[in-house]
Amino acid sequence: MHVQNAREVPEYEIDPSELDFSDSIKITKGTFRIAKWRGIQVAVKTLEEELFTDEYKVRAFRDELALLQKIRHPNVVQFLGAVTQSTPMIIVTEYLSKGDLCAYLKLKGALKPRIAVKLALDIARGMNYLHEHKPEAIIHRDLEPSYVLFCVHL
Image 1 (tube, helix red, strand yellow):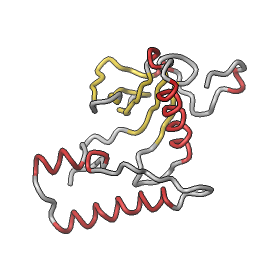
Image 2 (cartoon, rainbow, N blue to C red; image 1 turned 90 degrees about the vertical axis):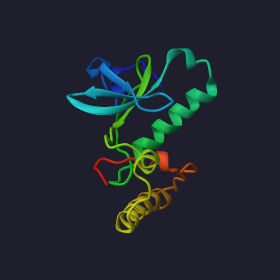
Image 3 (cartoon, one colour; image 1 turned 60 degrees about the horizontal axis):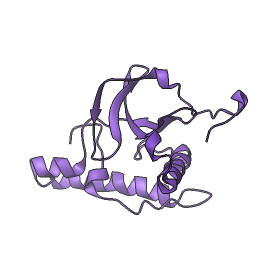
Image 4 (spheres, rainbow, N blue to C red; image 1 turned 135 degrees about the horizontal axis):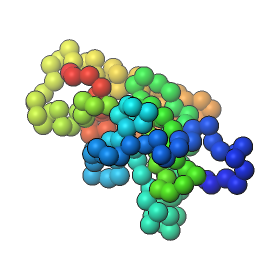
């Protein structure tokens, strides 16, 4: 991922000094945190330097980065950029501040039918976009309530 020539730096490359982790909060069990980039809250996924020796984790990170660059749809989390020319390597996406479906269901219980239908349609639109993506389909393989995120209250 690292390049020798400055002209080869990817368009998506973010200067790591623009990321503010001062009020950073972990948002999942894994490697996602909330940070600020250019004054807005973002979600960041970090590949720490100690994981660089794990070829599987590095390949998975690169594959995820390559995939996220191709995706643009209102029902799929938006890729904003990445840090790949320094360590730790970081993927930056939009932050959806209203939580996930799993947490919502645990807190509030079943959805009202009208909301359930709207949500199901939004999920179906996002999944259809991925499955119909050209030149090749993108198969999620891991759709579950904790991966359905909200930017507005239900």
